[in-house]
Length: 277
Ligand SMILES: Nc1ncnc2c1ncn2[C@@H]1O[C@H](COP(=O)(O)OP(=O)(O)OP(=O)(O)O)[C@@H](O)[C@H]1O
Ligand SMILES: [Mg+2]
Image (cartoon, rainbow, N blue to C red):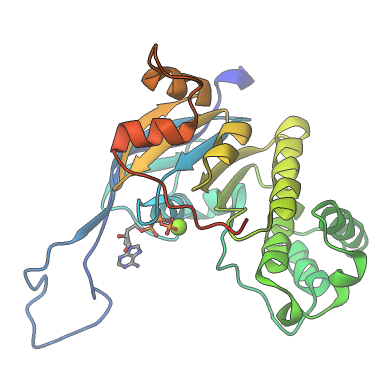
């Protein structure tokens, strides 16, 4: 099979709505209750090629995490289909789970245990031998800028950024074929951000990984992604290479465009930057 043309991920016409308070059960209220649902993801379609780094760029609440959760089989879309290497996320959930790994800021760990213990636990679930796993865990953690001794301190003593790096390490440990990174660098200091970005680039270049990442950070999307979809209120408003996106909105009178300009031009909005530094 021609590797170039292999589709790692296909999202087709996906819509996900939330009804506020849907989880609560109010027997005295009629279902629906006349409330308008929030359309978190609105008829989204795109394809990601094997080996690609695909970015989803959008402001807070634009539907990025919801979309990632649908791909990760954690939420069921109301409409549309998603396939991962040809496997349908609903009908072949287990096959999809084996092919993906999701990293998000709300990563769960055993907080009393150390990163090493947490990661060894994760490695065992994926059938990695303990000796090999230990070596790889230390290699990845130090590669991400954690000190060796940090691998042996309880997670609860670590900063959010450090915990995030452990979450990233966990995802890379098992070499998933499709990696879903939900804001991998949000909340990291500039240096840690560069370390994580360099690591993602290295993976793209040297491993057989396909990466879907979400970000608020225009610069990150620009340097890391082969193609970027701009999401606004659940809808894709543009999808192209960073260069292509800039070319779409460039004007003769303007100087060099950034993705920030592209976003403002397409949505009339400014992206809210939340990152530290
Ligand atoms: N479980 C839920 N129940 C109800 N509404 C939800 C739920 N999850 C998300 N939403 C709503 O869906 C919309 C999209 O949220 P989502 O978390 O996907 O955005 P996001 O792009 O990831 O934002 P951020 O940049 O802040 O992480 C928001 O309006 C949000 O309030
Ligand atoms: Mg989110």
